[in-house]
Length: 349
Image 1: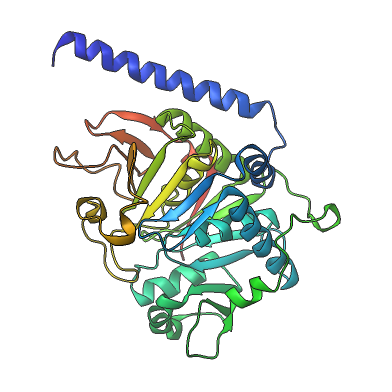
Image 2: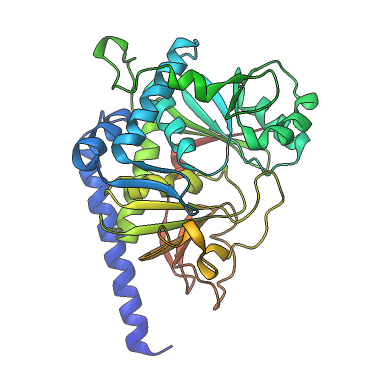
């Protein structure tokens, strides 16, 4: 490598580390900050901006819309007795509603337990059991896959389906529509501490990770600083090998911290084995996919094994985030997150 280029890369890496350190130092100035407070700040700062949309344009939410959806989820959790620190298992595709569910449950002091819907039926049932959820939410298109997993469940759980379906399960989307989208009143807001659990993830390797509010906020802000994302950016997030990888949810939050737009582009049909990480939607944008995919500056592949994979010169991704690292096309580590120190891991037994 050219010596000047090597020096330039080292300077860039050092600058990235300084930017992350400054961002985390700013976060330390608000020691009692939680995801509920963060959501309030996002709405106040850029509520009308487009926050999330799917690559085919079928779903889109402004920051204010996202907060309104989250408030409904929070009320649903409180109404149905999901207590502080108790998990709700989410068998959902990588789409805006999944983000609203995570933030809404965190707002209520409850915990979103994210599962990878691509797990085989027996493994999916084991993951549901591992997170200890009394409620399971399933996207309607994933219901046949969940039905295949249901006989392997070791404990009873209330099953809610999001979307129309022909079976007797309760409709969560209809239940949410009956609830207010207003911010919770002070009397309804449960006490939440930064050390409270905010997220639970059941990995395909047999582990369950628990991340508190503080750890989640550190991941969001450090990643935003590491990537240099700007409010006018359009960020394409390409789902990788495991939707239960922390990066699959925190990469979205990275965009939300600055008011940027995150576009969710799954690379495989839900419930099926993972395939190529390359975003075919970018290669062949047609119809409704043209407008959302225009003007993208950053393209990030997210998922369990993305960060550790060998760099591919033909890879279209600007960055890859997985396995606890954000790396660029050259394989240079831009940031190694602290999730493994802020999360507690337990082997499924």
